[in-house]
Length: 166
Image (cartoon, rainbow, N blue to C red; front, top):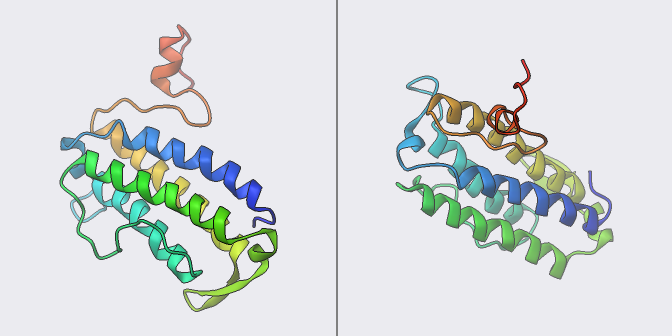
């Protein structure tokens, strides 16, 4: 739960930049990669992260530059990257313009429950972290290089001349 807008702002900048970092390594071919034929693909997961920004923020009365959740998954990685970038920037803009620390205690209906806005923002951040991690597993299966977020990836350890951790 966030109690200060500035704390959310700091986390959101890092986490949205991290998501952009991962999305920037996706290729059009990799978007179809999934574990199972009926499972979510990289493209579907990336698009879900992107559309969830607007879907969740609408529930708390904010208007973001986000595609609606029923918008079909784009055919290119660049379209997903661009849409996410706009959505992520617009969240920060909306919150810093319209909310203050006290606004984080206000409640809104989130999926049939009343959540404080600070809790909704924390779920928004954690939601993208969760799905971004799923994407990185699929990226390895698709043969893409995985970039480190909270520490070096296997490839980054090796580039530093160190054995990757097992």
